[in-house]
Length: 318
Image (tube, rainbow, N blue to C red; front, side, top):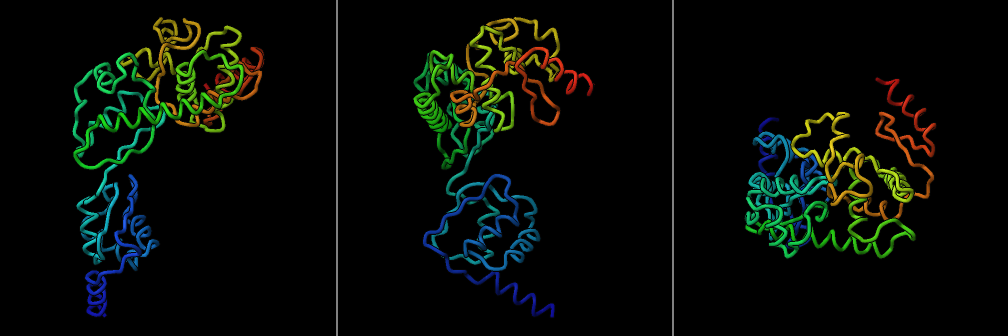
């Protein structure tokens, strides 16, 4: 039985499977498991018996994930040949992902980690990079859209930055054109700043319009924004992960506890949801909110209600 099973597996691994189309392209997402890729290929009709494919892949030393990127098959391959292609990461394109809420520095670090890129911007100052892109008078923070960008080996990191910048500009222009009436923003840049604050204040998509509504209300009545993420951004590398009272009193251009209005620039890369929330905020009377401790916030329209919420969700927990 062992000989028969071994012979059958050998036959399976060395027999080409016809491709659904020629050429056939497929994409392996970042972090996709070996089993997940095998199931993906089986559903596409590229291989049979995904469990056997997974088992052989693990025996050959691939226990975690294959290299992410686009793969192209010009002709039918045997499962063993396909496995070797995946093990080598023989991709037609690689990918780099910029995450919502990342700073410009984090985005640059992600680019610097990509060995397949030609690093034309490595070691340059933010100002030099923006000048290279043709935007010498523009601060880089928040100007690049968080998304996954595919690239061929040897492509310049400058090309990816240019695509990300153009995509953010397009989304911002579209959102600004379709914005709600009577918003307290004089320019699209101010809306981008607000979107970056909303992005950093909550990870819950459903809450973004309410967060934006609170800050819009504060702007309208001349109230300080008093948002911690701007203070943290202004502290820069001196921030150790613990925001203290003295930090809230330390004046920087980004300290919205000491300075009125919006900070001078965005503080992170906002995603499309945060852009839409900033330009379509919830119609609310709330001007306060406090974290509940479960990832959500309690919103209040009066200071008395807010103090009650603070006592319930913050002081009692402490």
